[in-house]
Length: 339
Image (tube, rainbow, N blue to C red):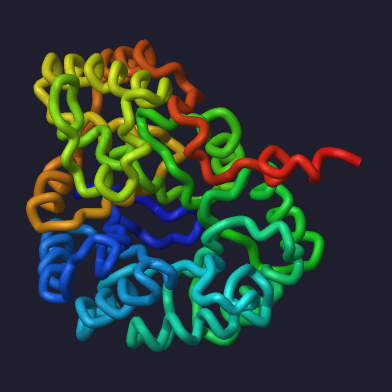
């Protein structure tokens, strides 16, 4: 395992990080299975574990808490807030009112007195940057969080938040957690240049593109991944974007074979090769998944392989732009772009 500095924090984190979204109901992973995955991840050298309050409505945090009991100080622990946690309209968002409550709930579920990294899961257009950053700064000063970051923010909102922190003399976001893979390269256009400019650590989620880059999705085969059962529309080959992805996967498989790599090594090696990326978040559902993914630790792709990837998926291009989560609200709601 290799390690890099998380932005400008001075904290050293592994280039592969463990994402716990599949712990609990989402991945149908039991506590014993989750604990075994955490044990194996730590044994492989992973030292950053990332979860969120909304993953299985808190169940993931509870499982992570039980799995790390007795070894908290050896782990860089990250969680998130902002997504709806109930039908109550104020049990979501980035207001001070909700973040104070949400963090206390997360700490209770995790069984800890602080988290190392607290992330705003999505940009909240209804809450000002000053409101959110002020609350996070106070929680940091109270010792409940060490650092805070953003997740899946559009580039202009990352810039705006950095300006707001300076303008109001508040602590700033020190990390960003965007979606990034060979098949979804849009953040290379705007987000990664901005995070590099501001010295933010980058924790890339979905580096295996929801299973498209694991080697399990190939032409002529029935798709039987767990993600395809939950989100069949993402693997429906009558959709042009999915046909484009399958074509790219077939060509990438040839590149991997020629380089003597697995598809997982190619995919994770690509993400961690970008100088703006700190870690790639892997989200194994089983121990076997974890082992095949940690086998990619330390993979370094040659310039020829990276050039071949660029020839298949153009830099800065998303093959499935409709699956982006950082689209400005005005592009989704017509009323916001008309007088």
